[in-house]
Image 1 (cartoon, helix red, strand yellow):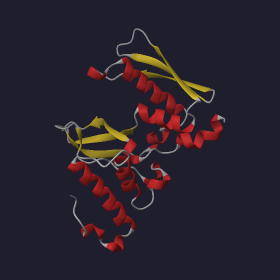
Image 2 (image 1 turned 90 degrees about the vertical axis):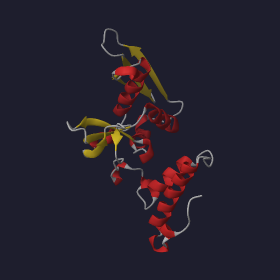
Image 3 (image 1 turned 180 degrees about the vertical axis):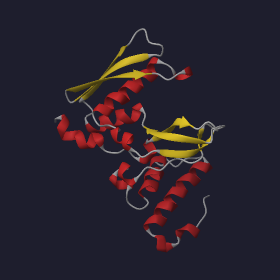
Image 4 (image 1 turned 30 degrees about the vertical axis):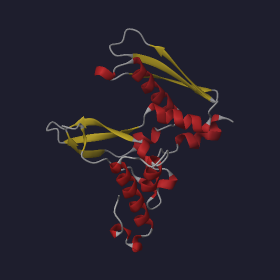
Length: 202
């Protein structure tokens, strides 16, 4: 197996629930934020494990003399190596582990993993400064979703299945969340059935 054989699978969009959002810019009045989509290092590892579990390797080398913890990452996939620098954020999260995760993500972009996220349109959202989060999660356009999420109700089904991956959650609020996604998915698939008015969560 060569890198060219799996390039499309490496570049494929991630499920929407795997994509997280962080503020890139917050307005002076702290009421609006430019939200940036990103994935974490574990999502990169999962993608590589799913496609070539025995065909990739990642190494880091600490870069000395920098203000923040910094490493040079070296990702090899099916015999092809790409390098990039990873830097830890300011504050308590500024560790070599954080720098290594950043380096892995940056190296992965060289292979096309998550690169499409840089092509997303700018998304401004209302910002809750007290909670340090947007008041609502930005939506990904259809082209930035996997094929199975582009069908009616697909995203809701994926979210419900993710929450049910191991077992039905004991927490009542989580059960309601699963029920909400399943109901929304079924309503999208069969809008004429009027499911929105049937039943209540336990």
